Image 1 (cartoon, rainbow, N blue to C red):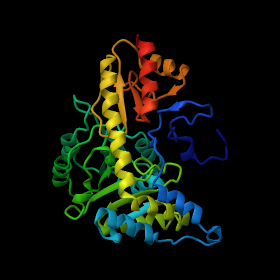
Image 2 (image 1 turned 90 degrees about the horizontal axis):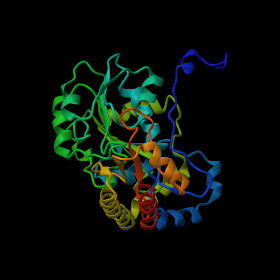
Image 3 (image 1 turned 180 degrees about the vertical axis):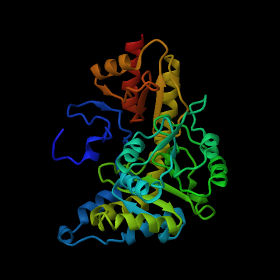
Image 4 (image 1 turned 45 degrees about the vertical axis):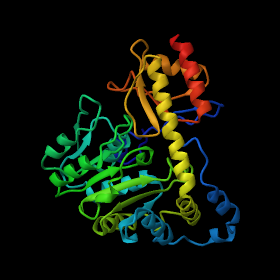
Length: 353
């Protein structure tokens, strides 16, 4: 370790994203959308006057916030935007969870949460999933003396999603701290908690353009909540970077939001392919957890996760294998095109045959 590093840097364990291979593989490891962005995104790119790039973007991202507000039927003052939902989550950790008390979080969930906690000195209090591999809402609600609650819905990497009634039951019991619901995958079959923000001022919902809007390469995320919470995020953002979203990203995000027909068609295709893939995996003897996301988490009783991962990689297919005690036998498989999923099943038939 370098002598020039601050002591706190030496203690960090950075987040490790899924592999981005250089060779040509069927890439089912990072939950990218298999379909292109809305046609209007390409049109906006072609028509963009590059001279605009010499100017700073709108520091308030007003046009994008207004487009999101219209989509969610909320006020623009209830919307915050940032460079991907990861940045939005990082700002939320700073703004809401540094109360010298534990942050309640599921044991198995998005693996960036422990990284943020370590970075910002937030103690995590981890709650195991229940017997059905679901986030234990009752356990999260029952805890006391906390800095807040955070979980993904649908959860990552398990895919389970709680209905709106369960989220509201939690909010009725946790009223003194922020409850953050990370909805990166909500558009693939789950219910959004945005419908509850006017009734629960401590609810913050985060989301991304990376998954259902097919803009992972753009880095664009958002949060929706009470103006009180949005003001807290703005206070942290403006103490760090007053220009978080560039003008081109804002323009393309608006174009993606406008094309509702394309959005609906793509997400419905992903959902249909997911359910067909689940059935085909089960026919091969896999246990597949129920999913409301654009991926499934699956394990086979006769083959380890490492064996299956290696066998698929040798056949040109890349999936995600988490080398942790709880998930070591599982593979997380992104839902790709129909042809890509056919290739996956054919490879697994060979491996497991």
